[in-house]
Length: 348
Ligand SMILES: [Zn+2]
Ligand SMILES: [Zn+2]
Image (cartoon, rainbow, N blue to C red):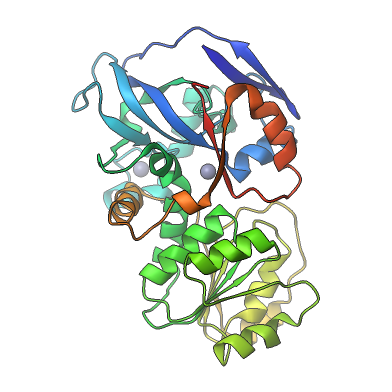
């Protein structure tokens, strides 16, 4: 089989590899489609990734082989694999908050053989077959197609962020950024009962998609006074601001934009340090929260909403590329363009 192997910064090569076999406790999945995540692009563009990994953690697949000791799964079943491997035993896991599991970083580190566990980001979904610990599997409803299965992971990020945000039915909402995570957050906020949702996004294509997916208005922040523009749309500041821009610079902006006493939810992962103005945080009595990833519950509920046709995936998929196109696609995606969600077909 042909797999795209990351060797170093901006160095991805498509190479021949033998088909893996399921080890003890594992299943072998035939990958359907796999999404390209912003975090994959970050790994590609940094020196964080250990050499030799195959990335891709946003995938659905079909079980084609079952390793020793695995019970409860059968060949032919459609599944997704949570990127995090919770212990299912700690205080958080027992409360259903497996996103906060004490152990999963340690499990990742053991599995990957690195101190940081960063190799787990090389989750392998860009290859046609991937070995997965059975404890990470979640069954996919039969009604979901391959595009939906591949997008369960990023959609669950948006679902989780809304679930944890403090959003109440009837609240006005602002979403900063209409990339895939922003667009899934927007849809989940609408499902959760938001009144009006204003999206801040400069790209015309993403803006149009945000409108299609339920935004009351989209504001291009270029050269406008954002507070005034948002207040003009909503008749005041919003109760909840989701920061899904994926850059550090918007954090203070999110606090500036929210109503006094409101909630700011940080959804994107950003790495740069930025100055903040603590006095605005204090005098506005804002609650600033951060969400990362999801629990198994979030996966199951996200898939249910997809199955009901309330959480849409197809409009976000801007292209599907084959394995040989991946290095060039990654280079292209490093420069912001018109892409929304790019999926990889590892059998092409
Ligand atoms: Zn992802
Ligand atoms: Zn745990």
